[in-house]
Length: 349
Image: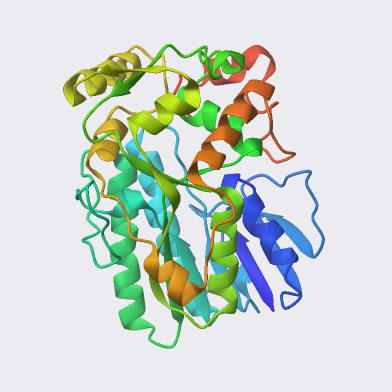
């Protein structure tokens, strides 16, 4: 079986490639990324491809399955750029897959695609996927869901799977995620238990997480098992402020959603962080997901808890962990993070 992984060099992509090459039924993996990494797992061939403009069809020729992971998080200050890469790029991926008669298309959607929903009861995969309109991430994930609706209607012979994971963490991705969401001013080695004084006890500050290796296993199962449709992917427990406070050895301090959002907005407008403040609104309103279908139909069982995944993130930040791929490398931001500072902190990729 030949599998093409688009966006194979990032947090999820590196774990997906590792999961695929460990499967004896998968004979070869083609990893597509904007920049070819120095990491060379067995069975894997790398090709430099940009989904927003390059011809994708030749790279999908002869594939038994394509896994679409590519996603541009930055620049948050240029939503046209992220729309072009994420929405139009996804459309180009699906079109190329149809042109090359790829029998299986697996797309990395997200909990961020869901419309606002409850925190006190989990929702299944039939919950509306219209996203949080104020956040580019939610808008784009939701729009790609609509593209897939049309794609499935027009290509009934192609098996389509949508995986909707919660927040995905692993140790090796910590520096890359700090770069994307925290920015160059985060004192990375000080993000550790006992040194963070408090956690905001904000209503709605509840989310789900999963280890990158467990998310990758869900993608491998989606390739090798005859399933279709959407699957929620998240590990227990649900992360609430009390869980974060215990993990960090910090105290809980009541903070309103309004105050939390406006603090994030101030930091963003002052170019102190690259993460757009609308992401706070998205987190506060997105639902808690029911993962029963993934466990029963996909046969997925996470090996790590959500707290394990978060703990690895903290350890990775403290030790400046990374991998030999451009999105995860500790050298990507340049010496003393000058490359990150020169980007305008969310203004340019």
